[in-house]
Image 1 (cartoon, one colour):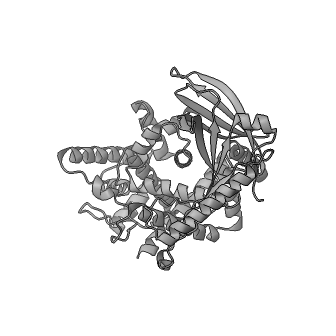
Image 2 (image 1 turned 30 degrees about the vertical axis):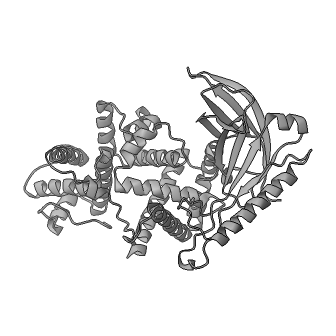
Length: 207
Length: 266
């Protein structure tokens, strides 16, 4: 699992605990890993949509807590393990709200972008411009790494103004012989990979 | 599975506008359904794209939900970069630094302005209706090669007057060249509205831009409204601009039309 930051809680997800967790998700380890990845993405989405600025951290806290309980003998009584994680996540969310109500918010620290900006910068707009230029260069580099088919898909999908775009997308879906929704998801996956590529490029260029 | 929750309801969820029972149901569904989660993430990207294009209806809700998280802010910035990379004119990043220019640079800028004025005079001869002034930012100082700015944002401004078109019989032309933006300034025959709406359509009827809430300004005793659009949205074609006045009660009253032509090169 790429790019995960250290967890804030004391309890660390050990290899054994992780194996036990996967085993509860599915007897087949590959399917279990897919389910795990889905649950983690869903938890991040949940915390983002509920206003958390530390969505990844809270998702990992949720997973840690669920894994620890399973290791300690708790059972998942629902047919769908995801519901169990959802319940744990809601508790984690409530705890963060309660903590925020009691003490200083961590939002200010969390709100800082992970991309460092030269501290000797007294012109915010110039700094913003340089960030945007850097991001654009990274994107162009990442676009060049795409396969020809994926590059054509991305270029065609986002081309044109709203009405033209809609017509283009219908035509693309027809050419590919897939429903428009499937095209949308296919493009989403490429876009997610590009987002990750650009994020990695931006961090490397700072270091 | 998603049929109960179409894109607009998923957008409501993402913008924090769902009823609690809908919110809980959506969350439980995407927790266990990867396909539904993907649908939600696709709707999220659509919202982000609308925001960066300035087309989102509930900007306030979007900013409240999406700009409080570093990860979501990065997705917004990525979308901006994607939009910029799709533009045929790269580096559409405007320069807004305070000007700190030396006298020779100011003189150079003055020469450029005079030349632009001469171009305007030449193009305004009777029968010639090409109204174009190109804005060029002054050249960078020569001793700042290390931080020399990239090619600057160039704007073509086209002023349309209903009387001019009627008297000349010709269509005003905007020559885009390497410009990043076309700014349309429309002289109004009918004033008195608190705000105006401008809709630009191509010759085949495709809507290129719709901008509401335009406040009138006075230029030499003539009331005008103005709107800008990226040059990337324009092809070599004829365009029709429809102007409507919006009353204080929100009623829209069509006032008239203007037309112009875009050439990409001389």
